[in-house]
Image (cartoon, rainbow, N blue to C red; front, side, top):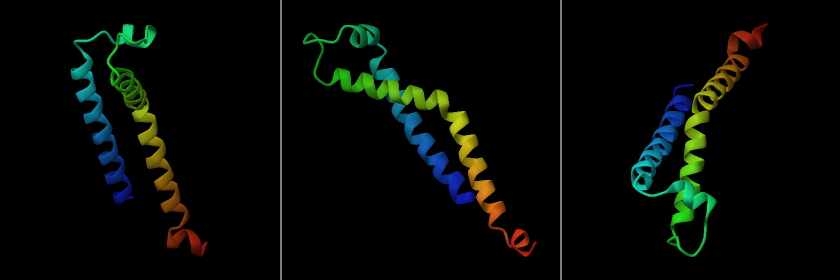
Length: 88
């Protein structure tokens, strides 16, 4: 269970750092215009950064539910395989 929590924490921290780097990097630009009006006027890497930002944002919004479900699954797996449960 500890290893699962550490793995989840590291993964969430990495996604969080990427999100905040993209947030500060794209804050001076017009993200909405890049999403709604893509075209040759945008730099080639800009749509990729916008897509990555949107995915990271979705992950950050869903993070509490993801963490709770993974913790719950690890707890259920540990409880199901515990020696006291196998004796019964």
